[in-house]
Length: 141
Image 1 (cartoon, one colour):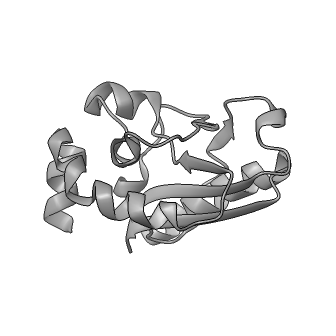
Image 2: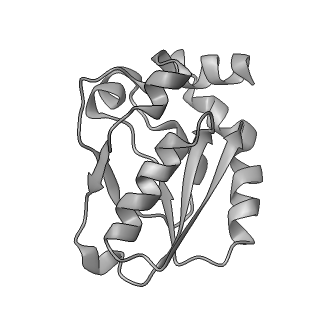
């Protein structure tokens, strides 16, 4: 998995989205949710990489980019140790009006679960905006 993510995320191997795309989409098809929401990347990361690796797996599905990153120039999660990750302040804000979120069952999709901090921040942002329930899936842990 380390080699996969190194090639996919950090070396621009966008074609590698296809390796796990079907697996992720099959799992999402079994979930009872109203919205599928990818964890966003910062503007800086998007500019460097040219894509959001999670969105690559969701290609051909209906999904909603309900969140955006508040900060674009902070140290990225992959460069932080466990203690730094756990101290991370809320990095997300709504990218849409609360009407898109109110009373919705939402599934967050992320690539790697390390400490869970990213998913907990994203879930809290959506719950605070009125989501009824937030669950998540990740490819790796």
